[in-house]
Length: 333
Image 1: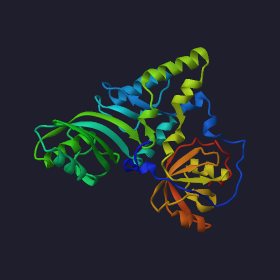
Image 2 (image 1 turned 180 degrees about the vertical axis):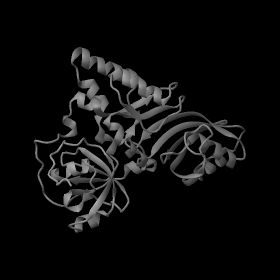
Image 3 (image 1 turned 90 degrees about the horizontal axis):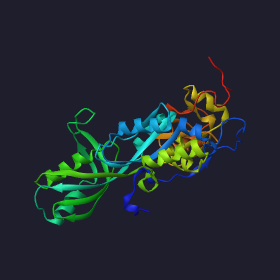
Image 4 (image 1 turned 90 degrees about the vertical axis):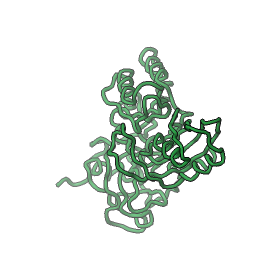
């Protein structure tokens, strides 16, 4: 368990508040834990430990071949030489990967300084980068090279050996650690570059619970060849794993299909809600069986949703559930 100083946005805890007591119909949908392997292959998540060498897109392609499926995607591209946590979405689970944009990431890396610097000065300068920083993406990045603000949650210098600085950094999605090292070098009045990088966390997906490509291949063979489901079920998680860190709104069965068709969420459809939701927050909308229905932007605070009886409380950002999973009880215009 990491020290509390290594907190990312995904570590924030919420309390569940019941707005109204309602029962779910057992004839529709199912708990994510009850999905079979075919369902997981069409809508599952893998916490992959990416090896050094291939691009993140090459890894996607290899996983398509291992599982013999058509749609695989990842969140947060890692450079070919970087290793570590690479969240993988299978099939429709790729729709939920954008939820990780709000989770935060952690890396352990080695920064190489180009001249000898006093250790205390290195520590002080690295510490000064905690908080909001401004970066310009590197030349070979896939985004426009304009100044952008990013947040550094923590920067811990683990060890300094001559000109090599071993560090742990927790940062907002979209932070370029390579650029961060260059900027630290500039503040130290020297040059610096990133020598090695490993991603150890993406939200609640940690390296301790990740799997390598060989694990995936072996698990698939055990399942297909021997009927052993244990390994593959330990590797592929339901897509709801990607929503762990987001505050939740739980809705009635009767509201589910309307949202699947793109309708906004109205207050009467809410059954339970997490604490501390503010207007504008990204939330996960769930069924009463804990199935992911949609990602949405809250239009009310938790207090407003609890107190009010009408009005739109969330606008959809991305629908996650297939239409028809629950019956249409709403009127179609």
